[in-house]
Length: 452
Image (cartoon, rainbow, N blue to C red):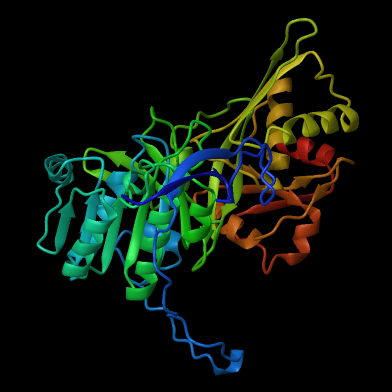
């Protein structure tokens, strides 16, 4: 039996120390060290596999040959398909659809003459087969194995030589030479590192499913996200059918893209017209409801923002928001009080983005302001109006980007009136035929136009 030694490893960055430290000297994280026993000598010195240093001008590159999964939303999120040799990490809450999606992706790739190996470490072969039957999946190029020992898994990869490998999940794998159990910092880091090196060496496209902690972060060391090429997060509530897959890291595409799916009895179905889904249940003439065109990556979306303003208990005014940056809401309320003279200190204010979408861009500021004033005065906005613009502390309305994309989406869905920053009028290529475009300089003008 190999000799072991006790070390303390940082869960965030993998830094090792022979004694426990309160603060990691590398990533400066507090209380991040865990005690683990590792083998004193694990491997023999490796031979160098990389080439000698080359001049930048001597390096030849070829255009990336991507593999299309056939699931349009997923391909677009990855940047146009799966890159051979890339490693994709998919995280999300339990039961949100990670295994379902990757099972569908694996099957879609297998029917296109790609040999696929699905490693089901948490479910038996029968359980995986039952799920595949529910989804209506089958194929001769689709192999499934129930294995958690990485040494045996490497033997399967050597024997089958697959083009696609799905690991469900990376936290259950282990290497026997480490004394620590599966899911520990050492095991997760070392298993992910070995599989990533294998993917690069043989140009195998790999997908990792990752557990998340109760805080919603990927479990295991932070270095796991640095090892892979792409990190995708599932968003959505358990009580809704809608799922949003967001790219937070992508070496082969944009990190601002989202893919929208709907959970059905046949698995996850891509939503090709999300704006229509988000606006489908909107009531007419509802005070506090406003439509705002937002940009997610390269995709324009029309979302509904709802505001509710009601009298509060004495000395206890509440501020709540869902889907927006909470710190932005008190700031906009202060601007309304200062620039429009509204008395909101004794009002409870709630702001919600319908559909579970999370918005971070400041272009929604004017929509939030209009919604709050609409609810406070009980005056609904026209159902055919969209509002966009960034609001400054002086009450001024500032220009936004990607204006043409936003207007095209509004026009496509039948909206007739757009209130936008005056600074954006000069950037319009041509006045939209079916849109009444109104420019405003400050929130006072915007509120007057929006509420009549």
